[in-house]
View: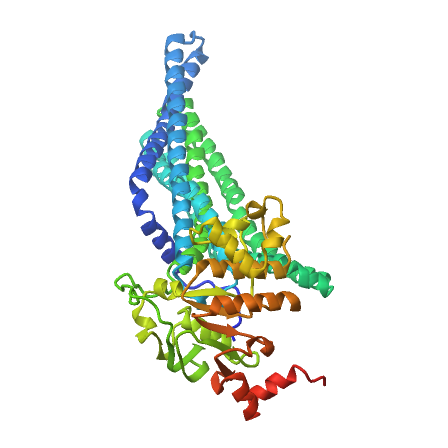
Length: 597
């Protein structure tokens, strides 16, 4: 009934890098002040690194002054050495403070992103999860947010530091010796071309890497949750081969992205060696010229400047790689955060404050998971208060879909659903959900005690919980567990499917909602337990409007109204005896239970 999940990798769109980084910059707005403080310390560390070679130049000149036979001026030597130590100590301190602040900001930003994603999950309609695998959403919460946090921690200060270093070193080089400065600038065009080419080919691979990682997470989630089926059908080899194929795709994209980006640093270093050689040759020629102002100190300072000059270029290239990962990850995160949400209903107030009678009417309901796939073309029915309504029909007839519409998990395309004469559209979703207790075919238990699983979202007393357990027939089971109701359950796998079904039924009994929805509530229990549950259900539904979806038609013979659905429409309705007397579609379904073909 639901559209198939799309697991294809999203292709990189033109201009996506700039757009995603722009969104990330906007998201960082609450952290601008601490980031600015961090950048001030980064600039301070950079300036100290730029001025330090000048002190080194003076230190070398003091030493080389003794080459003519004069003694070394130790006072000057100690002074410049002490200044140099202070400069580098302050540089280390500023770098640490800057790094500490950026680490704090990145972690807070990651926490904020995860919080927003967690809150967003509760606001997106169910149709989103119909078309996206759970592993993909999990990957956005974990891997993508981690990538963004780590990238911001590394790249922001790195880019600012590199830019300041580049500008400052250029100024310092031209102040020291413009001829040697021009010699160093020869390498810039080669570095720029290399940076452009590598980014052009590596950027698509970074996006593909994040997408493939999400697909792999989806495979892991599927294989983990489906281990019983995989082993039952001896599908370990096929599943393993499928996982290996996906893993190889991730390996390929990761290898290409990292290999291409990894070329940058050694290539930059290789080009800078030519700058070292050129500076030594030109400086040597100038030192040999008597009227030149270039000294050995100038040469030593310039060798440091060459390293400082190529270092920011390499760091910018490295930051570009990191930002590419951040852009790819932020694209996926913000894509989810920008998903269409459920409409805002903060202005709506509860409608049925004077009590709920339980009258439900489906009025010309039309619904489809997409406009080109209408599941329910025209559905109308009126249920009186206190009725037990059974919804039956073949698989795919629209039974569960009708219940989802009643709960407003999905919105109808046209028509309306009314409860006690009030349209569910006029009610807040919270009120609609409060009106119904649900027992689903797929049981769900979370990590916690049996008491917490049964009470769940209601502050129930021990007497209420025990009464629900008695009615559901699980009191004996609970008594056999260590700690009774306080028995701790890690995942629910250690409890049989039938017992979990009984626990979810007890959960609905504790909820004590005015209306009930039972979607194949007895599907996982044996015949004897089913009879006990049926008795409990009869007591539970007495005086309440209830909707029962059942494939075993023998369980709903006492229903006040049976809606027989086929292809989204009600083809028959009435009591069991009336429908059997008609000898129509329901009679065929009912009799097929006792026919061996």
